[in-house]
Image 1: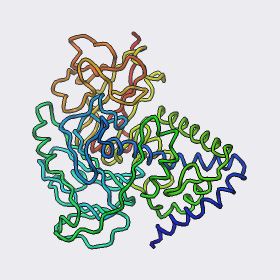
Image 2 (image 1 turned 60 degrees about the vertical axis):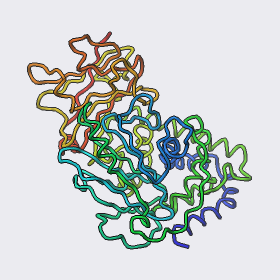
Image 3 (image 1 turned 90 degrees about the horizontal axis):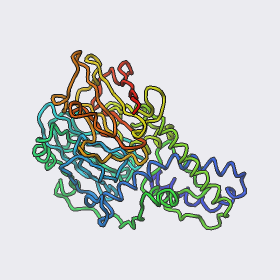
Image 4 (image 1 turned 180 degrees about the vertical axis):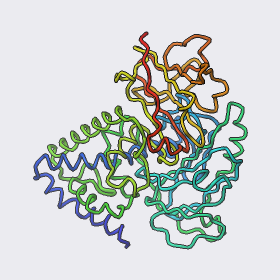
Length: 459
């Protein structure tokens, strides 16, 4: 039994005797522990909500395919895609849920032409971005990459470019392939066919190891994610060995019954304690919602496990506002929580103008976009143009002023035929606007470039 397994076993063994302490402890202590546990584990449960819809529920509308195989979509996201909040509509996605319990997987990326962006974002169960494959890190030459779980011991085979070790047994690879224009989809499809995932034993021709035990995946939906939060959290913790700095944290969570594979609610927990934990979870969710509505940038909100150590609030807000967001070096997400006058964005009350001067266009090495979302659901907005974003590949078709500036019109009604090329349709109510800067230049990262304000125009 390794150190991580010992820690998990110790946490489980500790649950019952420590529950007695939790139920006699001051209510404030129980509430504080529940609050901290909720914040820490919220991204994990949100992650499972998306993974379940995509890879574990064949009967669902968002299903892509089973684990350990790459599933491609030769299209961009629309309002019908509700498997993840604030999705991008710039890059067709490919999906891979990785179950690394039995053996590693070998991921293959094809060689592609210079000037096109592609990436595979490797995300652990906590939603930390453990590493990347593709343009920024490896260039566009492609290759084979070994993705291993926390317990794998072995030597990588010849020909593998890099070994990436995931700290959790379950993980996600999220592929993005840049779409250069409406007629570019055939080339994207060709690239996507080159995204492959293969068990290590198959890649080397060796005998396969024993299969991992079957998992009874609990059903989850947006409606059950909050009321059954602790049940999902305990289920998922068994696939997430404690990170090196999490031993004390896991022990504290176990005092209120939060432990790998433990039943919820625990036997013997009083109604008063259960009510205190439920109230603390609801309050923590409200806190995250409030912070998410005030978010202005993704800087510091996404990163590796080491980079996100001690940043549970940031990690949870990021999962709520933009699950699976990229690390800053890969992409930066300037947000617009308020207009230039400090008011919440609402397409039923105002029209909005977003103007980039000729010398202050978003500084990127790949591409940029401005995407419109419903302010309540954080999903894309249905509209008569079927236009959900305006991005830099569209620049040749957009209208600019004589001084070279570019104005975008973010509003519910059309600004008129002459301006419709620059129209980003908004909902008739609360709205949310997110920019994406892929491969941002230093000026965007260090803050010397700032997004222009959204100027309201009364209706």
